[in-house]
Each structure stands twice: as structure tokens, then as C-alpha cells.
Image 1 (cartoon, rainbow, N blue to C red):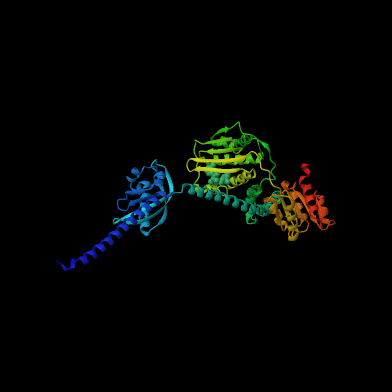
Image 2 (image 1 turned 135 degrees about the vertical axis):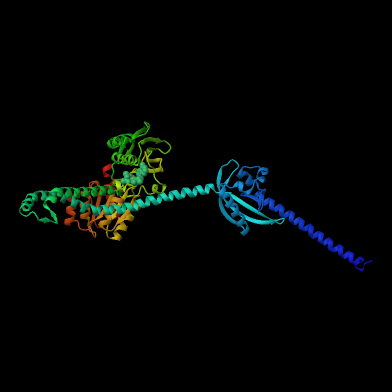
Length: 544
Ligand SMILES: Nc1ncnc2c1ncn2[C@@H]1O[C@H](COP(=O)(O)OP(=O)(O)O)[C@@H](O)[C@H]1O
Ligand SMILES: [Mg+2]
């Protein structure tokens, strides 16, 4: 008998084996428990979880959430390969590669489009990783549907874009008001002087002619009498035309910069505006042989608007539509209608012209954006129309497809919101300004803006459009008197309500201002009660 197999030895061996069996049993129990845990986790997971074999790419496990998301039964799902749940062939392969790669690197999130059993597609985020099982690499992925998140992001992006556009236009408005103001005076000077120059030239002709007869070689500015006689009139007329063109651009720029309050709105019909605009565009339409189809709803209610402004918008849209049509099957459809849901009316102008690139769509409402440089386009039509639509609290939309045509839509609210009252305080003394501001805000719900000098006052009159201007008589750059002089010259500002504040009631300036018809005066020092009473009187006495 082998010495080794003694009783003692066997006892010991059995003891060790028992221990090993026990530890194996424990390991088995632990494994079972952990598999149980894994199963529980797997099934409880609200994300869709699935496992596939890295080599065959066949699914080997899937949880209920995944079955619900993709719409398959478990049997169907386990018959699929990983690529079957990805949308877009090339992307599928890339996505799988990424899954494996990311899996190998462990636990990465990436985004893809997935396809459900019914063929519908959704955006998903996938969290992928890998593990070893029975000597093979397995990939697991947890997919979450993020379509809603994506849509929210897209909406947010769009509204941010609109906000940026609106802010850009507001900033441009300020700039434009300033520029228009600067250009107006010099151009007026040119326009006034050109006719004088023409007259002077005509009066000089006989003398120059006489002189030329005596001395045929004589030149004026290097030009002969014959040349001058033939061309001078044309030269002067060209100057006149050019100046008038600048003037018309300036006046349209001012329209662009100036928003609503000064436009008197009254009850009007959108269909009347369409018909009036069509009459204005008639000759251009006849020449172009473009068919106009009218789709005017009889159901549209009247609304508060400024007829000429609405006509200007429609006319711009019609002219643009005509100009966009470059074939002989041209058709423009003008429609109006009423949206009961939000109590708004709509106007749309659709053409089957050249359309435009998507990149242009973002720029068409910018002043000076034009693709018609060579044909005399100014790029102001749509930007002016945009500010007119905004002045009616409306919305301006455009869709367009290159080669197919464009659709412009204007939505206008029928009922107007009560607008808060806006007050501009012009005073170079900041302490005084703050005092007035605090007093008015405390007592009344006014919107206040402050200007520190005459130039700021003028810019804000055009942009902020106050209902009342509280004006200090003495300010740097341009004093109260000069501001008032400008007010009465500008037709649309001449009805501006003004409260003059002054410490010198006997001054010459004040007398002149009163002579212009500004009679609301508050003498310093005053208390807040007096101020509020005075402001209320001015703002509301007309309505009492
Ligand atoms: N109906 C349309 N179809 C295609 N492009 C258009 C249309 N309306 C406007 N556009 C584009 O928008 C630009 C700006 O239009 P607008 O502000 O009216 O200025 P303008 O007509 O002087 O160019 C046009 O030059 C054109 O490129
Ligand atoms: Mg135009």
C-alpha cells in the first residue's frame, strides 16, 4: 500500500475536497445571484439595453424597454443583427464600428439614428461598452430616444436665430436713423441748388455762345462750347436724378428705422389693400404677362392697421415675385384668410419664380441685401416691409425652393394689445433724471428711457418712440429749443407730447418754444406729486 494513501492522508484530502466543493458551491451561488442581479438590472432598466456578439453581430439578449422602443417581440429581436436597428446604410456600419471601438475603449456615448420595426426613425443616444463571455467579445448598448430633446433643441436654435435677427434689425435701426439724419441735410442742399445751377447755366448760354463765336478754341473746364451746349443739360439732369435717388433711399431708410406709434392705424380691410396694390402693380404685371390668381377670403375681419403701409408691403412682395419669374409660365397667387385659433389674419404671396438658396433666406430681411445689383435693386424692399409688419405686431415668414418659387406670408393680429406708455427723459443732470424716473415708475407703470444730450434725444425719438418727451431746456450739443425746432419740422414728430422742465421760466428760449406751441412747462424746483399730476394731465387730457 502506498504510503501516501494512509488514512490520515485520505482524511486530509477529503477535507480539502469538501472545502473546494463548498467554495465552488458558494461561487456558483454567487454567480447565480449576480446573474439574477444582472437580469433584474437588465429588466428594470428604463433605457433599452441589448447585447450582441462582436463577431457575428447577432443580438443575444435584450430587455423589455428595448422591445417596447423598437416594437419587436423578443424572438424577432434575437433574430436581428446589430446593423438592422440603425438607420442609413453607411451610417449603420460606422455606428457599429463606433460601438465596437467605443465598447473596446469602454463606456462611451455616441449618437445615431435608429429604425423601428414599423420603419419609423428616431434620434437616439447610445451608451456602449464590451465584456468577455465564454471567451468571446460581447457588446452591450443602452439606447435612449432623444427625438424630443433634439426637437426642443432645434426649436430653441430657431427662436435664438429669430431673436438675433430681431436684435440685429433693432441695432441697424438705430444706426440707420442716425445716418439718414446726417445725409438728409446735404442732399437737400444739392437738390435745392441743382435747379438754380440749371437756371444759371441757361442764362449764361448766350454769353458763352457769343464768346465762342469770337474765339472758337476757348474751353470751359477743358470742354468746348459745342460739347457743353449739347451735354450740359443732361449732366445737370443726371445730377438731379442721382440726388433724388439718394433722397428716396434716405426716406425709405427712415421708414425702416421708424416703427409704429407714429403710424396712425385705423380699421381696414386686407382685401382692399391687396386690390389697391394690384392696381399700382398693374402696368408692370401687364408688361410681364404674368398671371395673377386671387384667393381672397370673404371671411377676414377688418383690423387696425395703416393702409398705405400694408399696401407698401404687398406691393413689395408682388414686385419681388414678378422680378423672380424668369420664364413665360409665370404665376403669382395672392391669398388672404383668417386664423380663428389666434385671432390673426394672413396674407401670402406665392410665385413660381427662381426661388432662392437657403443661405439667402437668412439675409433677405437685412437692409441692402440684394441679388439685383445690376438691375438697380436697393435691397430695402423687404427690410422696410419687415419693420412695417413689426409695427403691426405681425410676423413675416418666407419659404423658398431654388428653381420652384417662393412663398411669403404675413400674419397680423386682429386685436391689439394695450401698449404700455413710454416716456423719454432728456436731461443732462443725472441726479435729476433719476429723481424723475423713480418718481414716475413708483407712481405709474411707465416704460422710461433716458437721454443725456440733444442728439440722443433725436435718435431715441425715432427708435424708442415715446408717448411723452420730458425735456430739459438746457442741454449740451443741442438744447431744448433746438430739439423743439426739429420736432415741428418733422411732420410725424410735430404732434409729440412734450413737457419742458426749466429753472429759468423767464428765458428767451422758453418764450420761443411757447411760440412753437409747446405749452406744458414745469418750473424747477417741483415735487414729485406736481410732476406726476402734470404728466397725467398731458398724457390723458385728450382722452377725457
Ligand atoms: N419672390 C422672390 N423670389 C426670389 N428671391 C426673392 C424674392 N423676393 C426677394 N428675393 C430676394 O431677396 C432680395 C431682397 O429683396 P428686396 O429687399 O425687395 O430688395 P431688392 O428687390 O431691391 O433686391 C432680392 O434681391 C432677392 O434676392
Ligand atoms: Mg424688392
